[in-house]
Amino acid sequence: MHSSLVTHTEEETIAAAEHFSRRLLDGDVVALRGDLGSGKTQFAKGVCRGLGIREHVTSPTFTIVNEYNGGKFPVYHFDFYRLRSLNELNEIGYDEYINDEGVCLLEWADMIEEKLPVRRYDVQLSLGTTNTERIIQISRMQ
Ligand SMILES: Nc1ncnc2c1ncn2[C@@H]1O[C@H](COP(=O)(O)OP(=O)(O)O)[C@@H](O)[C@H]1O
Ligand SMILES: [Mg+2]
Image 1 (spheres, rainbow, N blue to C red):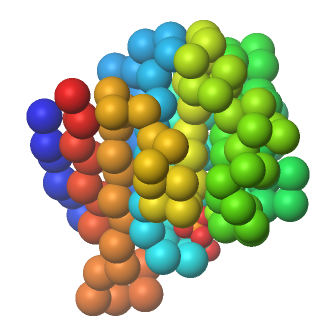
Image 2 (image 1 turned 180 degrees about the vertical axis):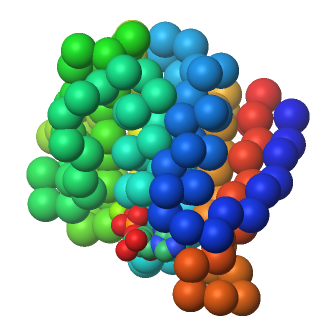
């Protein structure tokens, strides 16, 4: 499965993520890839909204992981931007999060490429030709 779309506003990206979230099942992992400001956090916001989470969603840059409850599934929202080594993944209990129930959203997934489960969604966000254009490519791996 592979889909590609273009959004023109932040709201459109959130709406696209909300739509995508309908196909998520408990335990799914979503690897978010793309440069700073490409919209990974906005996409995560949309997924959370689609799953019925009402909490405020922001990049968990300093805490590495945020947990949101009260939706269809628990959501674990990671941001690996400031990860210094893969050893830190053990400290935060990464394997448990990935293997247990709940949906995991991974910003800067490319920082931990070798630790990603083979079965996952990859979401690549890229800048378009205008300030607010984004290209979003979603693929199902395995
Ligand atoms: N089409 C769009 N989709 C997503 N974000 C957009 C779009 N157009 C402009 N933006 C802006 O780009 C920025 C994306 O930030 P963010 O989601 O935090 O990126 P990242 O998490 O990838 O660093 C926000 O300031 C948002 O308002
Ligand atoms: Mg972010």
